[in-house]
Length: 301
Image 1: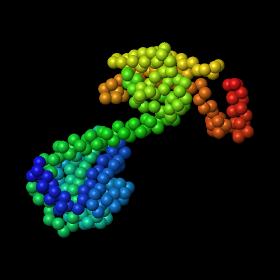
Image 2: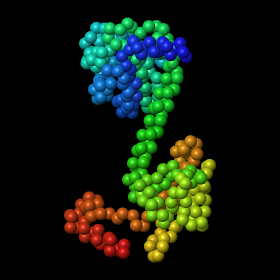
Image 3: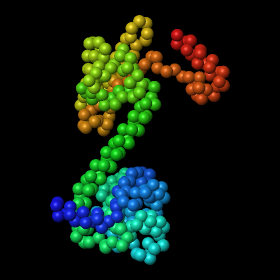
């Protein structure tokens, strides 16, 4: 690796930055990009405009896993009249690009382009050969980066969706270790009268309840589990208690191959519909919605 590292160093010294671009096949646009060198100031322009005019990237997609030079792929007379080349590439002080597709899947494509500064000598064959030897490990890193980003987006979207639910939701593994929790569940946990989280695990306030919730989660998150169960957690005085439902999640949602359970907690004192909610749902006037909310509150009491 030392010899190749020295050659890569010469590539970087001869170059004038680089671009790492993750494109989404679902949207047809750039999902994430990292630019270095003078072109960093033009990254936003590329994503918003020049990506759609880029003549080089489609050629890299069809390149069969090898490094290609822009100057060898597109004729000079074409580049001389090209908006992307003149207003983006040359504007960044770049005259040639050595690029390759690092990763290509059904949903994403990742490319890496090494930029050659205007006036510098062309990329030497030895440099291209050294980069070719690095294509496989670079491709593995690009695949991992893309998959981790995809998981992060899915997790973010799922969390926001959970937070829109009125029901309290907790996701745990079979040992009751909490994997996810939404805002409604956090509010219940803070009261300390139903289920709580202790040392990262979901527990009930009394021994019989704790044994029951533990058994339900173990059954729902066990291998091959197809059904869940229910339990009731009473509260002090005459206040209505919590209804808890435990259900298995689909096997493909398993966390590191460990099955998960979803716990739904029905809060009897969850927020009722506001006058504004009633007005939007049923087209009521402000006065009508206030009256309806007051009648509903009186009925609950």
